[in-house]
Length: 191
Figure 1 (cartoon, rainbow, N blue to C red):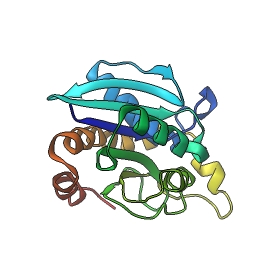
Figure 2: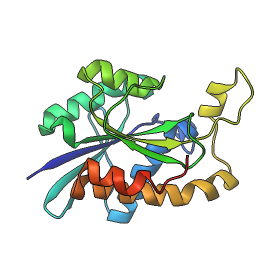
Figure 3: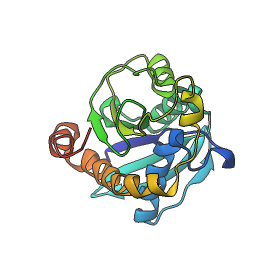
């Protein structure tokens, strides 16, 4: 059976719930809810499993904290023997407007510590990532406060449709592959 590892980046712990930096967690939570599956506290992360048309899908929310996300990704890729082209990392992105979605097959970490750590631990940047815009409407020098700040109701009104779309992108990545999914979704997303 083909296996896919879908990683949503974020930080564990109640104080980080609902923050911009935890957008990856929020998308996996939405996917799990839609699939009627629950996360278990496992090694290096919260893990949920489901299948889509005979393909095994493993959802991972690393509990290593953002800057050590690569340890969790490497562990689960090795444990489940998952090929690099079947890895999708979902990450918040300051350089995109709130709710904008960008799916890429490879690329730099763009200054994101989670992606940077994954790249250094698995030794490549040739893996798919779904970048989710969190906007950058913060005063100079306040980036950390912005990233670790919580979404307000208005933000969530903007973001919610993008979370639903991200769930569809995950399904398409598993069922149709990266290229078809990029062609279908990147041209329709804003940002």
